[in-house]
Structure formats: C-alpha cells, structure tokens
Image (cartoon, rainbow, N blue to C red):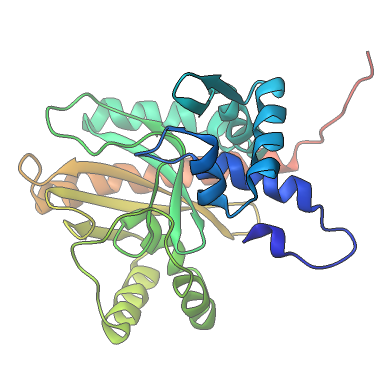
Length: 267
C-alpha cells in the first residue's frame, strides 16, 4: 500500500488521501464510507475524515448513495499532461494524421506494466475501442506498450512486467518469455510495433515511439483500427508511413520545445 513508505519525509496522510481517490474505479463510481474503508484498508474514522476533506476541496461529492469523485479530479491528471507539454506539441500532428487515415490516434506512456493514455484524437466508429484520457491497458499486448518496452534494457523489461497490471483486463494472448523477448527485439530493430487482436478481439493497431531531445523514448503514438474494416496490409502500407512521419515530427517539435528558455514574469 502507498502508505507503507519509509523515511522521515514520507507523508502518510497524503498517501492515504491519494489511496481514497484511486479507490474509485470503473464499476464502482460511487461508494459508501464502509466500501471506501474496505477498498483502502483504512479505519472508517480515517476514511471518513479523508472523504470529508476531499468533499471540502471539491474532489469528492457526497450523495444519498455514498461518495463519488467530481470532475475536478481530472485537474490532477491534466496538470501532468500540461506540465509535460506533449499534448500541445502533438495535437495538430495527430489531427492531421486522423484526417488522412480516418482512424483514431492515441498517445500513451508506460506506467509499470501498463500503458496510460495521455492524448487522443478519435474518429466515431460503430465498433470502437473505448479509450479516454487516463484509460489503462496492459502494456505488452498493445502496440503502444511494445514500442516503449522495446526501448528498455532487458533487465528493466523483466522488472516492469513483474509489476501487476492495474487495468483489470486479461489479454487474449500472453506470450512466453522467449517469444516476448524475440518480439521486442524485432520492434527495436524496425522502430515500430504491430498488434493484431492481442489485447481484444477485433482490435488492430500500429505504433511508433516518441522521443525527447536526448533520443529517449518518452511515449508511444498509434493508429488504431478495427480488424473487420482495415486489413493488416492497409495498416502497414498506407497508415504506417504516415504514422512514422508524424512520430518524427512530434519528436522533433518536442525536442525544440525543450531547448526554448522558459521565463517566468512576475505580475
């Protein structure tokens, strides 16, 4: 649990507050005090004080059926995306890519053994992958995850994938270690990753890495399609070249952004 930290600088109250916020997940958007206490392992009086504090701050609302998060919680995640600057850089490139492919485009970053979506430009489809900012998927069966795992040293891949997924999803396909390592070597060599219905039936995507000014992979960007609509050949022959160009453009723009001096002017 997060509150099991050590050291004189660890703030247990802050860790407990964050635990309460993250206890609200898909399938349980509203919880009673008893349910929050059970989900977090906190004593009910402690959970109650934290919930009431969050209510006062505007992150939680209290209703007849219990407690629920408010949209203000999104400010916490948006602050991360804005501080990174990646969304502002990537958005126009992603919009142009979506206009040319008529397919949805997403950016995700590695978080433990999962990927977390930090930017997305979507195209309405009858059958589509349900994704929003903050959506979490297991990294290995996704193209976005493969391009980031492939950039890690072998021992780091083992450590990352040893962490339990917090996505709540079970992939369709789980390769053994030898197969996994061979696939990641191929991704590293060619500079892009393809997944064909590995995460879920009908979902097919191709991804490329995004890099900072030092060449370090900081995220992945993909084009996501439905298998019934887009054959692998079209994904690779038509969409992949456009995706690689966009990934290069975003990486170059982000590298230039990093070199711009940031000056704060006192008002």
